Amino acid sequence: MPNGLDLGGVQVHTLFGATFLHRAEHYESFFYWLALGQTVVTVLVFALYAWRGAGFARESAAGPIGTAMLLAMLGVGLVWLVTVPFDVLSLWWQRRYDQATESYAEALFGDWVLLAVKFALLSFAVVVAVGLAKWLPRLWWIPASAVFIGLQVLLLFTTPYLVPDTHRLRNPRLEAAAARIAEREGVKGVPIREETVHTKDPNAFTTGLGPSRRVFVWSSMLDGRFTERQLEVVVAHEYGHQARNHLLKGIAWYALLTVPLAYLIARVARSRGGMREAAAIPLVLLVYVVVGLLVTPVEAAVSRHMEAEADWMALQTTRTPQVTEALWRRIGTTGLSDPSPPTAPYLVFWDHPSLAQRVAMARAWQKRQARGG
Image (cartoon, rainbow, N blue to C red; front, side):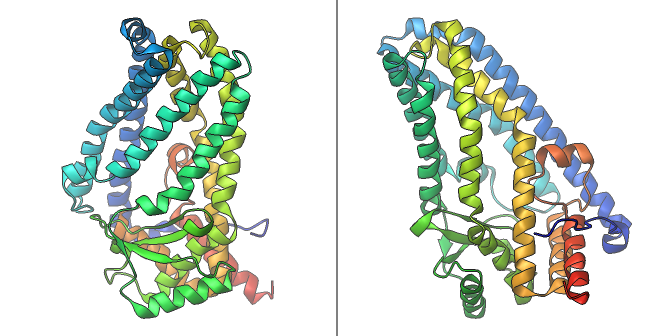
């Protein structure tokens, strides 16, 4: 993506109208407060668990490793319990604005396979850390970091096989266009699938590693509200992620953060006897949660940059800036997305450029082409 692109100057009131902007801002603002509330409650719950959780270790007869795994499993359960009321409120708000049709049961339990895999990987990570701490009391975090990164690679590889309710695209023209786009962007052979969802929010994503790589388009994008040319831009964007190795770069960023985090956990765990002691697990989980929250703005900034790169690559591939601008406008109106969010929520929560920035990029690309750039 070229340096010095001017991604400002878009008049969102002209693009979307005052009525829509007021509705979208009101809709989005609820999720900002919801995220803030969930953050506060999560930290409080894990602070309480770190304070009182050591008592469970003294009462357990499962041995150090078994007790550590049980305490980690309890921590995962706490995450789920904290998430439940906020997920219910989120779905209630989406249904109120006619943005979702799924039931509350589907929202809470629909992704149980992926949740179970993450649950198992976390439990295994704790077992590895405790086992290594018994062998290397002060340096366990070095080999453990390698194991944690390996588990993240494994999760990336297996995720495409865990996405529910998928099938081939029903539109043969779009499927053929996707194959041409993939070849043009140097990722020929990466399959594209449709995922059936129960929301009106339009979305697509890509995941996987090596032979497991897939692009998924939500059924809400294929219900006739978007033209085929607009969908081709979406497909080019997702294949752009694969072409630019964004998922592997995501693993690299994960590794960059994991090593110092493992060291920090090792230092903190010493106050509870070290990582080899199961009583340290609740405190370790609190550190993990707090650090995860603190690095969220960094992760969001990295993600926004990668998304901008994929946007630029889609423009380079499709060469349809007007179609691209129409796509972002349509995504805004169909998903009730605030095209120009407030600065604080944008910096903390938004892992994509704003719609105003994406429209500005399409216009900047068109201007560069007109100048022969």
